[in-house]
Image (cartoon, rainbow, N blue to C red; front, side, top):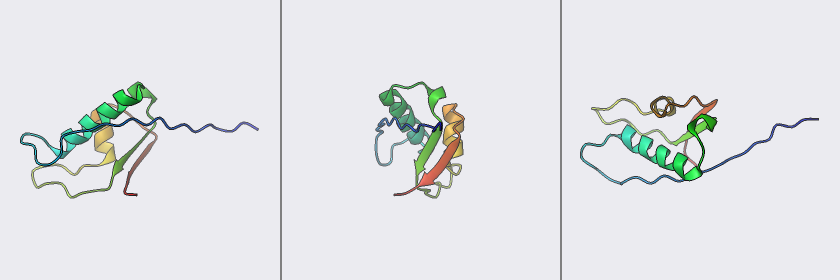
Length: 86
């Protein structure tokens, strides 16, 4: 019986915190994800899942931030998208 193997390779990506002039919520997410991908040492096309932290209301001048939007801007097409808070 063949069993599908599950793997998790986790990277960590830090960004500045707080109100940073000229930055959007999306830019922080993209920077953190890019840093995490680099930290994990894997190519973007090997990413098959993206889990973002819980939903926060978007500031009035920004679009709603969703895992789909983050994936789209990262140029990845994961099979699994979620927004979760432990």
